[in-house]
Length: 282
Image (cartoon, rainbow, N blue to C red):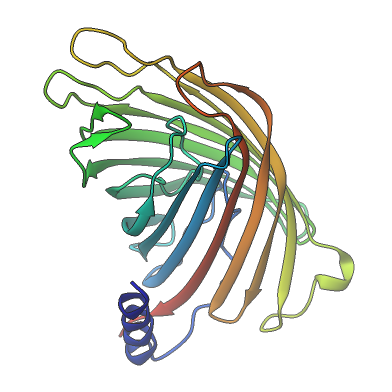
């Protein structure tokens, strides 16, 4: 696992003749509008953990490769490197990357962008994609492929960031089983203090408060909806550090509301850390 990640990073560094500035990266958990510039690439390595009331945990290490086809069109693909499952209800932690054992492809199209005041901009981005499972069953349910669609809109300036977004994910049948659909809604507020509004090329630190709300419909096993759905709201602080070609972000979310039924373990905390490297290829 570590060797594979190191090889990818070294390959990217070796073939990247010039660096990309990482100013367009978004929050950790919530949906946002930034896309890579034309010809830009990024490699994201994300580690996530969900911890339950009984000490049960679900962990994931996942890689995402993204490419800016145009200034407003971004293509992304993610795949898991390792995963440890626990008896937790199905959930989508991060808007841009699932935390299940599956391949995922996403297309992001920023269809609206306009200048607001001095240094501010208002943007809207549409996301469409799908997943292919790398396991036959998930939480006792046959795991089929899925399609997903989402959107985000918001405002960004040198000091303040506000994004509202969300999406839906529909799973197809695997035999007579089907995983419950996901409906996700996210809100993000970010702030960059005056002392941290540095010149280009210097470290740039931003702080966020993120909230995610998900409604997961019941899964079906055979002809019976064997598992109850799950509803949850999580809120917590995150931070993003940008410097030249690198971005490091992480944070924690705590449950504000949960209803996962009797067959799943309630969560205590969600943690995510993401390291991104930005580059261009000739």
